[in-house]
Length: 465
Image (cartoon, rainbow, N blue to C red; front, top):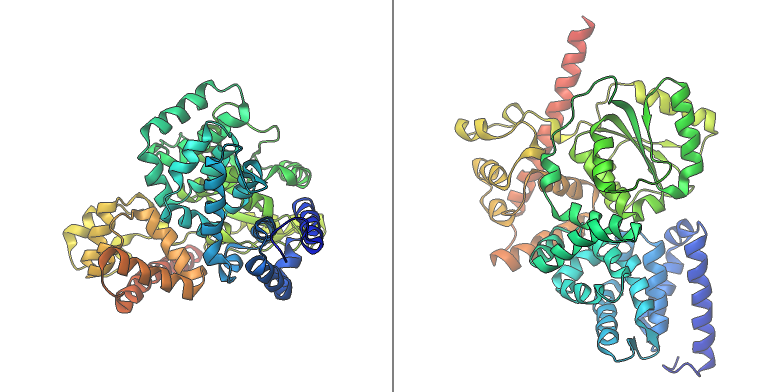
């Protein structure tokens, strides 16, 4: 194909891809692309070999919309995707007419919204130091704030954003004074990701008046089914919190208060839920607060992926798309009534009992909840277990980071995880990765989880005696 629009083949292909993009945005067809490797490879090859940039851009847009993070990373074009895209975006921004060749910058920014949802694109954005570019564009294009919100879930991006105090001040002003309610929500969301104050929020005293049994966390696309779920739970006598009207004001604080006042969080999983920045912040806060998470599947053919897969781990979920609603509710009711064992995870482990500690003074200093560990606590723990290389490699990790790392090691793609560790060792430490230390780190975390499960079984037997 030639790189000019007058080429008939190029024009037809361009039009076909635009129609395909419209279909994937409006119809539930992602499962079809995810289950069909031939189509993935065909689109990948087209994006790799096409000479016309708009063809490549359309292919990248479709693939980023329908594929999971892991599937997208496995494609040959993944390594060049960020470089290709940011090159066009930067040239369009500096062009007098705000376009790259015939591609308007608005079209490129819309594509950025989809790409920014993928964790590996977030990391590539951080590696290429493109945050200053987005900050510069934010004055003229409000959609950039939504892109920055998605990117701000990445730890490195958070650090880069914090190094721009004038932009942080601008976010604070917009959060308070903007006439656009959606803009206030987005800026509150970015600030929430950048601040650590919400980690120190005091949990309100639970009373019969301010406590809910259940909070339903969902994407508004699934509102009808979630309303049915809510009604049935109310009939069963549960006190349920759900946002039907979309919260106003500081939505992040309102979300946090709802989670703090609820015992169980039902996560209604769907592709829209995974793509929602607000849902991601909500689910992460519930995890951080150690609320019991009960996942339910709301979208046919959808399989949890990306951050959502890491969050729910190996939890069983009720599939509302597979069973009749009445049957699915029966299954959910049973799940809500059972003692939660699988969801306790490593965060609830009494550290002093779960591991063999060499230094009693270090043991006594560690908070019993790993999510409360500071960077210093993590360093003490690693050094106590003679994980010298890990202590230097994970120098900026707190307890929450350690928990997410453990989930990534367990449920992520092994080869990609090992490659990332190896590259980080070379880049930051100038030495090869010690597989022995990495294995011992994972083993220690697994010991904690086994200790919890064993203790629960022992306690259960005592209670029955």
